[in-house]
Length: 579
Image 1 (cartoon, rainbow, N blue to C red):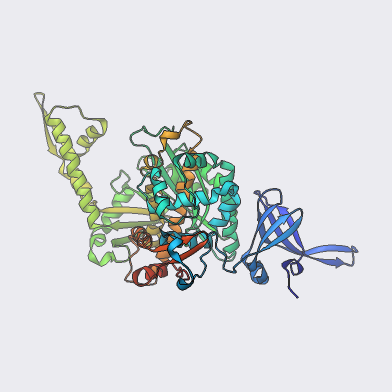
Image 2 (image 1 turned 30 degrees about the vertical axis):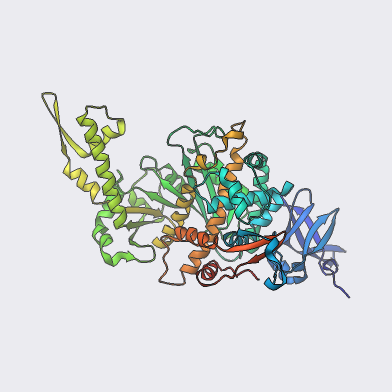
C-alpha cells in the first residue's frame, strides 16, 4: 500500500504571524477532567505558507521534515483549507533545469547548444540551498519574474563592471535560470514590476528561512551593514535616476552571510534610531541573536557612536586615524612601534595588528554619554597602504603648488590643506610657504594605519572581516548608475529605482554567501589568506565560468570537470554535476 503524506501528518493550525505572513502549527489536545473539556497542551511552529490569505506553497521547517521524511518527495500547497501534495520527479529536485544524469553515449549532442555553465551551476546550488530561490519564487512567481531576476543577478555577479545592455549577448552564451532572451525593454519592464510589497514579502521569506535553520539556543551574530552611494559628480547621464545619494542597510548572518533583511533610504543622514526601529520591527530573531551595526564613522560626526552607546546597540566602526580626536592619537602613539614591528604581522590578513582595550568613559568623547562598557581599538598597519598614502600626499601637494605658481584660486579644501601643513610668511605682500614639519610629521607617521573600534568584537581578525563585508557592499554600488543605465527606453525617472537597487543587492547577497563559503574553507588551512577572499571568489567564478555544457530543453551534459576546477567546487562545498 502506498503511504501518502496526508495520512501521516499531525493536526495542523494556520495562524497569522505578528509581523505578517501565515504560519503552520502542529498541536495536541488533552482532556481536562476538572473543566470537562479538551485543552491544548502542546503547539509549535512547523512551517510557513509562501503566499497570501492562507493559500500558497508550504515551506516546512527542517526539523519537521526530519520527523516526516516523506515530505522530501513532495511539494506541498495549501488550497481551499486543504493540503495538496505534488510528487517531485527526483528526490534531489533542483530549482530549474534539473541536472539529470545523461550518459554521453546515450545522447546525440549534435542538436544541443553549448553554453558557459560552470559558474551558474555553482550559483544555482548556492541560491537553492540558501533559501533564496524559494523566497524569490514565492514573491515574484508571476511571468517567471523570479527566474528573470536571478538571471540578471548572475550577470551582475559575473560581469560586475559591464552595463546591463550587454545582457542579451551574455545570455546567448551562458546557461541561465531564465532560458529566453531579455531585451533592454524587457529588463526595464521587469524593473518597473518589482514592487516594494514584493520585496518585503521576499525579505519575510528570507527571515523565515533563517529562523528555520538557526539553533534557538545558540547565539548568532548578525551584521547590519550600512553602505552609502554618493554621486560625487552630483549628476547622472542616466535619465532613469533622479536621485544623487542613497543609503543601503543589509542584515546578514555573520558566519554564512545569509540575508535576513535589507532596506534603502534616499536620505543618507537618516537617524540611526529610525534605521534600527525599522529593522527590528521588520525582522523576527531568536532571543540569543545579537545585531552588530557596521559602518564608517566620520571625524566630524560621532553622533552614531553616541546613539549606539545610549541605546546599547553593538557596533564596529571604521575611524580615520588622522583625526582631531585626542584618544586615537594618544593610544596609537603608545603602540605605534609595536604595530609596525614585523612581530605584529598576521599572515591570514597580510597586515600588522595591535589591539587596545579601554573603558568607554576614558575616551572622554561626550559629556552627556556615559557607559561602563569596554571598547576595543583594533589598529592595522599595511606597508602598501602607507605607500599609497604617501603618493596621494605628494600628488595633492604638487597640484596645490602648481596652482599657487599659476596664481590660481584655491578651493576651500585646498586652503585648509595649506593651513594644516604649511607656515605662511607674508613679507610686503609676497607670500612664502614653508612646510610645517611638526604637523606633517605627525600626520606622516600614521600613514598606512587604519582603525576599527568596537564594543563587542574583541578579535581584530573578526572585526576586520565584518568591515570587509560592509566595504564590499559599498563598493558594489560604485558606477551603479552607469552599469544600470538603459536610458534609450526609459520614460519615467522614479519607477525603476526599487528594481535596480533590488537586483544589485540580490547579486551582493548571493556573492557574499559564495565568498563566505570560501572563508569557511580558508579558515581550515593556515596557508590560505582571508585578506583577498572576495578577489579570490571572483577568480574562482571566472574559472568555473569556463566549464562548458551542452543544453537542450531541460537536459544538460557537462564536460568532464577535473583538476583545478574540481578543486574550486570543493572550496565552495559543491559537488560536481552528475554526467
